[in-house]
Length: 91
Image 1: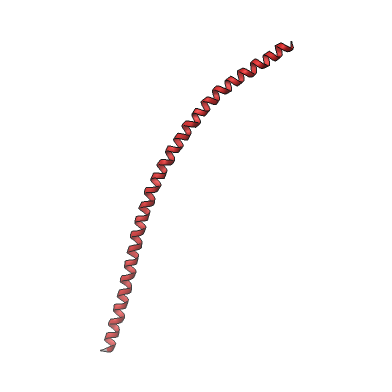
Image 2: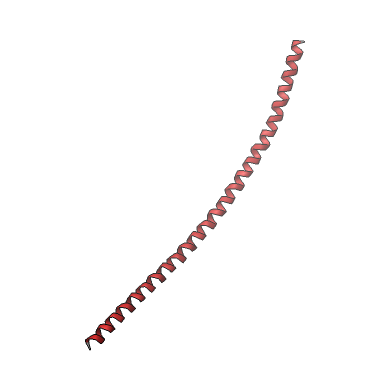
């Protein structure tokens, strides 16, 4: 009788441990799924923001490049005129 009770006690304890491990694993899996989902959502938002920022930067760079091209032409024309004027003055 005592041996049978001891065996049932050991069996109940083992089952409780298995159930507790299973519950912990299920909770960890649920937490992992939730965090992975949150990370994916945040990463998508960051990717969208990154694309918008890059597009804005490219647009500004194109604008600066166009302005610089115009100024380079003006500077070259100015330098040529000044060089010609210096040559004419020296002649």
